[in-house]
Image (cartoon, rainbow, N blue to C red; front, top):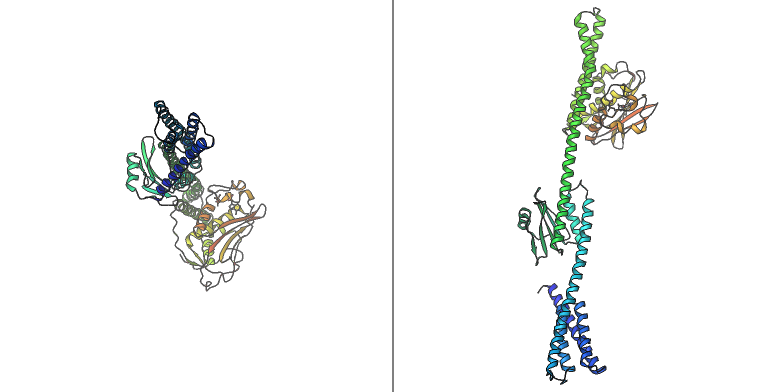
Length: 507
Ligand code: ADP
């Protein structure tokens, strides 16, 4: 016999013993103490039986009725002291006494059962309400089915919960115990909408339906729920799952819309950026072809414009391609060890045409360890910053490129004496297409810093700006270093005015 059943039987035996004791006490009190007549004794028994049935139930009340009839007969109906009844009238009275006490017991226990049922319904409603509230608070960024299973276990105090999602084919579990393996019941409930109650294992498996369509199934262990409450739970779970799916679909649609929007804005910006150098190239080449520029130095100037603008176009194409790669999440790092001086030199070489008239100072800390980077990408990032420093600062002001070791990393900086960036715009300039108020008349697409930031982040570094309006800006980014030794050829510490001398670099 299972422990629980044994405990139930023991409790019933104790209650029956109490019932017999009550009848015995009434009998003793009535017969010996007060010596009441048969009518009074009958009423006293009846009151006790009603009390017993209201307190415990029908079984106890029937036992009390039978015991009361026997005592009534033995002690109060003549001939007293025997179970015989002399007057046939008393037989009828005894029969009616038994019938009355059993009927009253039945009524009282029915009322009690109804009251218990009403309390249970009330508790179920409270739990359903708690579940519906917790479903509203579910965090859509994490697995909703898993959270739902957890909430069910918590709200209903289930020892085990299993939630089978038909769409994903996954079963999510929660609760202190494991749900007994009933994969078949889950699939059948999910497919056919059947309900399984296993009284021995204390489990329920119900289907979760949305409208007429089953979308999964739900298993609960050690939870007493009426069919209607179970239906309510399943409906709430269905709504929770569906809400999560709708949210996911909406965010996917939003992402697709944003991506489409981004593509067209990118295309507009790139097309706009292409137009300026193309117009200059076209004007120069038309003038050269028409023969209207006879003097060689003028021709040279025009060819220089074509060359310069072609460089700009090439940089733009690189930028657009980098942006597209970043957007598509296709940035794969081809890392190696590079001295920072080499990267700076390479960038300045590529920007030769635009730095001719600029003062560029390079200060790289001696003994700086090489950085562990994809040189092509880091050069793109650095170029964006140097390009901005040129673009946004006066021609005759110097631009300083520096690199120093900080906390086991290398921090590269690009400083200018431009107009500076107001504090409230300092984080926004790293957003796609954002351009600071003050610099909107200067051509730009608002993508350079986004590209730089993505490249630096992909390397596990950080990028930030320190700027004061009216004084200038310093853009800095950190890069990982190798544990290896400093570059053997040493790094230049101060390249002075003008551009860096051409050197050999890996490409
Ligand atoms: P773009 O230069 O094409 O506009 P960026 O993403 O490179 O795009 O820069 C975003 C914005 O940040 C610029 O429009 C400008 O307002 C601001 N900015 C960037 N660098 C500097 C700088 N060195 N000095 C002042 N403002 C800058």
